[in-house]
Image (cartoon, rainbow over all chains, first blue to last red):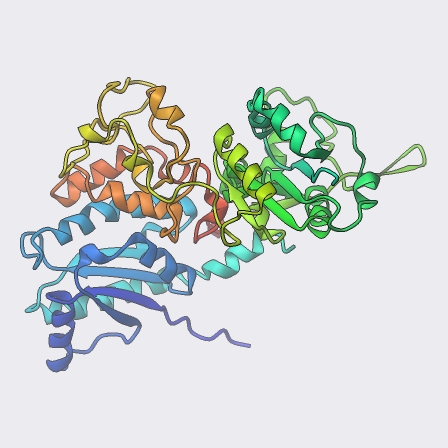
Length: 147
Length: 325
């Protein structure tokens, strides 16, 4: 039996002021991009607790995108700097757990960059497709004893 | 009225928790005035059949330390759970997985390969590894099963209370015993320690800047912390902001930053990610390059953030990458 084609599941945490509005612009401009990203609107990229990312991966996401305002443009002045500082440490940590570095991504997308949003989602979806499914919970279960 | 009976048991542990009981010093005599010890493998000779013969409820409380990795440990703790109305997870390993829990960074196969084949001090030309069942000269011998992963006590049995710490400090042990004897117990599932973060009571809190930035991390092997200054502001990773207080600050007083043995504050969903979020967002960096350099200055984030709690993490354990084909 032929294996069904793998469709990546991607969770996107989009800042309400820039990137979510950018995603809206991509939509209202009728730009085409893959439907693999589930957008979650957050007030700021700085609000994205690393726990959100881990929970998404644990609950079946194959990749996670965090997108916020360009540095210097944060509505709350420095929330995106917090995201910028957490991201590489989270990626280092997740890599130790065995999550490929390419599965999480941080991008700056402004409200006027609908085209850029569509490009990022297209590119990221293809990147995750190439990495294949993560199946975190199933992989962990296989390496744990059932009591 | 007969004295209440208590049991102590150990699983995957180092013996430090037993030491903590001995560290009650003279207070142990007070405890012994109040209770009888029905089981304590480190100090007293009891057999499995003795425990199997207990009437249910005869022994009031079992204090169980250590994480669980062997089928034999699971058998013992299940038996104690069946017999005792109260079970207290005693110490970091039973509470969160502890240091033995770091073994979930690797696999059983890797551990066996190192232990019985690769280690330079091993001389094992026939490649013999322990088997669960062996026959030697007509005798059937059994060894416990070595599980694929290390578990917290509450992954194996229902746990009523948790006494945190590596090892739990004597005053918290004494308080817990007294609370049990007097029947003044908090709701089931409580951690028998304060809820506030260690920073709140830390003697160095005054030196913590209001808007702290953390310089690139230094390592204790190559630098010595300033004995007066907040460790984080000085560039030493300290788990204080996301770790429960109540430990007596033994590490801080020894000029060592907090390593997190008391576990996370009650609101944390994941102990390691909580501290990562707290310290990383304060890193001294304002470009992606400097943020990466700041992150890279921490050599082993997993081993540092989850030193005592890997089996309690949301992601549970390391999953090795598939060998590329």
